[in-house]
Image: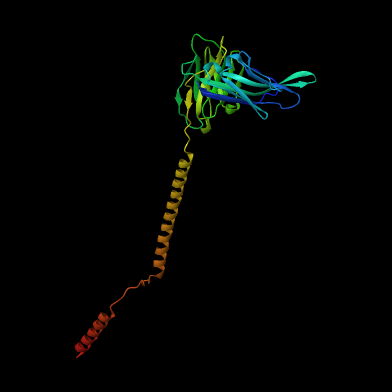
Length: 304
């Protein structure tokens, strides 16, 4: 990979063979500007050069498939009918005059992934995973036995094309911002196992293994990749259900307490208003009166 001063953003363009792509380079647009290059970084070669005076150069091998135009400060380069061999890392570079010398200013880097209909040098697994949010997945990139790699990439190629991981054969590596602190990998001879952690919904995409193999001048890309589709955890429904059960329990407890209180209240009120029965023994005085009368009568009778 080419590195230099003032390195800017990195884009990923993923297309099928036969499509067209656009790469835009930002020019300096000053009196000190000399010209702008678009360079293929793998086995470096200049693809397009446009000078301040509008003189230009186009790589002969691409002359019948490439067009360019200047739009303000932008140099727009269109490559038609792309081929697998066009997969590469393209770097925009502007040269300016500085104290009588030319100074190189590196601009945007664009990784172009051309998905070929024929299988490439990489075997990748799995083809599809469907984890939940917060879970992890493993993606394995393996070179076919007859090849050796110099650089390996893991790229998002569909929904939001961007670089995920770069590893060189000398063990230099770069984890790109999309998975900062969320990626681990291990190398085993011609195989690399990449673990993506704490997956979120916007991580859903197609992840493709790509790489530069020895004695090759282009980026080889796995044609199918791994489709990663993240299932959203339905925390809201579970939370609402828990709250509903909790709320229902409280309501039932309150109603039960109210019922007990109401029952006790009515019992006390009834007892309070109930007429008390005197705790006395009634004697039938009429009978006693009659008995006394009869006794007295007999007494008088006996006396006669």
